[in-house]
Length: 110
Length: 347
Image (tube, rainbow over all chains, first blue to last red; front, side, top):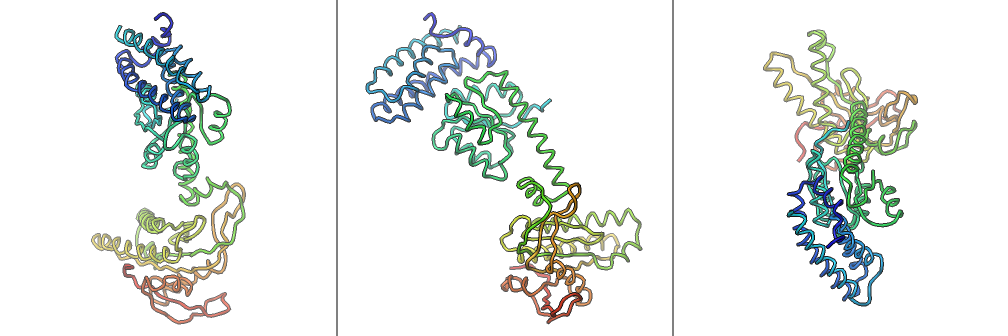
């Protein structure tokens, strides 16, 4: 999980918002992110371009907040790339999210 | 230094963003509330009391652009400082936000140090603006101030349909002679306070204070639904307030006050007169002269409130009046129909 989370960004977040608060915030992200990914899948299946872009945009912002750089980059790619014809990109995003989530869980409690 | 502890509203549909922003702002000493979309934010702002809005652009139901358009169209919220927090890409979005009146634009994730600086600067600007507004209002009246703040200042005016009221204290000279100057000033201040209350309560504007008298306009500079009815209701309230004041004065062993009110409706020429340095909002024209004559005539008529035919007709029977016939006033070619309003509450 080497570069999945940018440690500098994450420790700055802990320093400015407080480590306890960041635990809470990470948990909120764990509640929200799976819904956002589900929303991306639904939008892709329905051909809803704008909904898809918004979902990716939201996920990008949150990923960057926690320093989940690779997740953020992938989300940005989806945000700016238009509606994909297949869910492959979302699958890749899901994999990055799972990785980032595992790292965040450890970091925030460390 | 900007003050700490302002009341801020965070509008963002993303829960993580909302929590984090609220946290940063709370740590900076502010009171923070949040809204999950533009519509909720607008409702909260309209309930009042917020000093600043932190606004996300992409939100369901009503997005940030729509919120800013609504704010710009709302006279009460037009000056609300807005700091946009967004991660929308492209300069075009930033430009559009600034054009719509945003104070500032911060990219997400928001840097807390930058956030603090921008909020302090926006609050400071708002404080200066509020101070300026309060100053204008103290010396103008809120309607004239609103007109000034909205349209800027220019000498000259326009012809409008309005109702003009003159009012004074009967036998004021006798009262002045019977008491000390401090007591007279006290009495005048009380009187003005009560009269202003009644007039502004009916959306009228007091535009001149002359010793123991005043002139008020209904329907200019800002429109009023029914200027004649508003003016007559104000006059009735003024009479009622004088009765309350008299009850207090009687308890202190002082002589009662009586007021005379003259009201006329018609075309007036309204605007700012004076010089660029010192000007006043006023109205001139036949209607103004007639209202002044009617007020003066209350003494001879022995009635408290006199109105002209145009005002009486506009009341359409909603306030009782009785005709005193046609009266020939100085400076008028034709006799004028005069009506007295009974000092009873309108139904």
